[in-house]
Image (cartoon, rainbow, N blue to C red; front, top):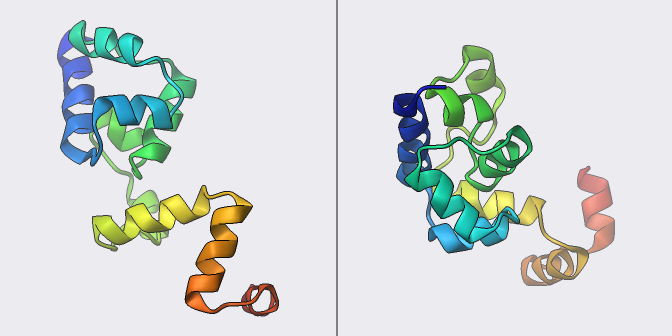
Amino acid sequence: MSDDESSRFWERVDSIRTMSLKELAESIQVDYNVMIAQKAMNRIPRINELCRYARALSTSLEWLVSGRESETLLASNPLANLDSRLSTIINAIIQADSVILSEIERILNITPDDVRTIA
């Protein structure tokens, strides 16, 4: 991948991230200093890290790497048409542990039986 394509990767990351680079590094379990060095040198992270970037940034790996989205992905992504705040909340819920999910159920007045019925 050329330096130009690599710099566009980091531009795409910066254009959609809603957290600091340090927070992003922590959320995807990447060493912050390594992330900063990769960005400064226009280096693309390893593929397993790229997948974590895409997940944390609520985007596709394809868009993150190439700047393009396939039509199939756009049509099948139920979060594609949601505003970014709601999408961020939904992704946080998807990744939440059982304690947080129990608290969300309490706030929304949903019982575990209700959840089983909905699913």
